[in-house]
Length: 140
Image 1: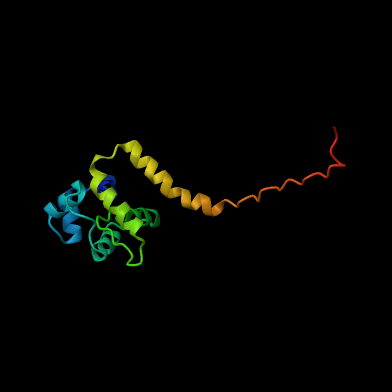
Image 2: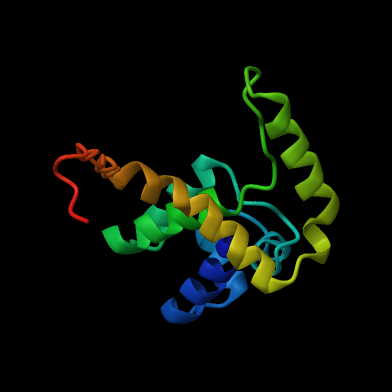
């Protein structure tokens, strides 16, 4: 299930309302709420999210978590037209193998992607140059 599906299900249970009650509050059908919760549908449009925030009177923390869940649940990827060919090949490779990745592989890929921030934050320490000694300075 997507992060949005998980969040919606958890939120509905926390608010102690049924799918039918949530659907009535949001002006949609119970089957749509069900499809969102099990991940058959992608994240809903911004208008639906705004209606959810209002109808459920979500706290700022829940609103932030909701927005993060929506962003993390996007199913489509759009590449920048100026992306190098290597990026296109990476996306093609991921698309081909995504369904068969082991959870450990997913964790490793995410760790590699997070390295960029670590590398940017790390200030390189300049290498210390060794001075050559003159023959007279060298002890024997």
